[in-house]
Image (cartoon, rainbow over all chains, first blue to last red; front, side, top):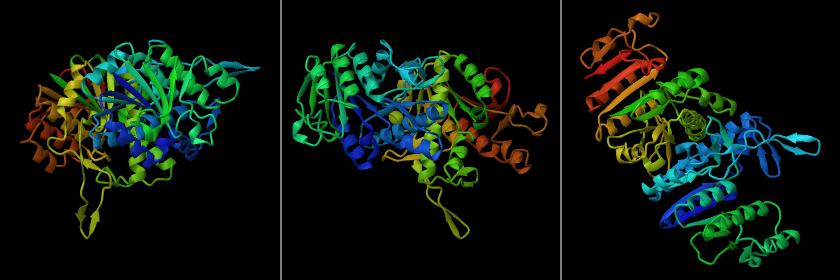
Length: 262
Length: 262
């Protein structure tokens, strides 16, 4: 069994929340992979350097200067901070971008036509089927290592690409499900997918591909939660054993959060 | 046989020189490890962020803000740039800080008394005997991977430390010499250690621990070349088979450069 865990930007942004989460993650038994988001540090660095941040549909438009910024922050600062903390907790972590051991190869996104304009996301990548090198990840897991993966991938031709960390987590779990039973856990700051964002008791315990369209149509699920659930549904459909969306602080607590099933 | 190659900042700073060097490095046969310096990118980033750069004896004084900068530039930007280029050249590179798989553990340097003041280098680390985890590096080499190591290390207690890349290369070669025959090659922009810096034909073909004191006393060898040769001599004394200081463009050319022997 391989457990893939995604930790989001809000937890990464808080040193205390991150330390608590990593302590829980280090305690998890068995083979595991951590995928981390970027948080606000890249936006802060870009601002300090006078680089404008453009977002389209929640994705950062990545020009060459922005690619350098996210590579520095995600693959450098945040990745090594997480790895060094995990090492101090006895978890033999190894930080990876997709280029390292070529664990994940992405494809640069084509410009998208929106009305009368072509929207070019720049150095943004999507992970195609077969983009995850499960043999390479398996080799590292076989050495007793815990891969800590940021969302900077490569195209195999010498270029780095900025990807979405939720999608990286989903693709990684799908890729690994070819070699072992795999679970995927999305950890974030809320107790799960909620009917009412202001009511922590309104967590939806189960979402399936049958429920999802009506939850979406009724507006119960919206915004950034939509792609997360779509990634989760893609993972269960592709062979991942179990997908859960839960609060970071509940990582090792059974029954917490929202289970996603096909 | 394991070949450890160090590439310096001046080559890292030039995209063309770096591409040429990596093309040569990718072609080298057998097990190999690349250790890279930082170049001027960290100084540029620090300046852009309004962080003052203080150097004492060629070592950057590393306060918390500077540690973040060098972690971003060395472990993020430069490391991933090198890894993605090597991958495109068919070399299965994996980028590492010392924290990753805990390949190298350093110890924070104690403040040094200079005259009437204590000089605190901040988050600067030195690599103690036994600091290189040759079993971990050997495991990665055994997977057919080529470690690409930057000079950001960890202390094992959750803190990152900024180290000198020449020293990292020397310590890595010494550590690996415990498990296999090992060579160490320092690549830089000059054709070797020269008697006359303005005369490329004045390369000293051999330096031994017997010659070195007089070369140093006569001022033939000075400045940044001194610690490089001291690191090289430490490596041969500790069991590294062969140490060569040569021009980056001569990586695969036999007989070029300066051989360091005990």
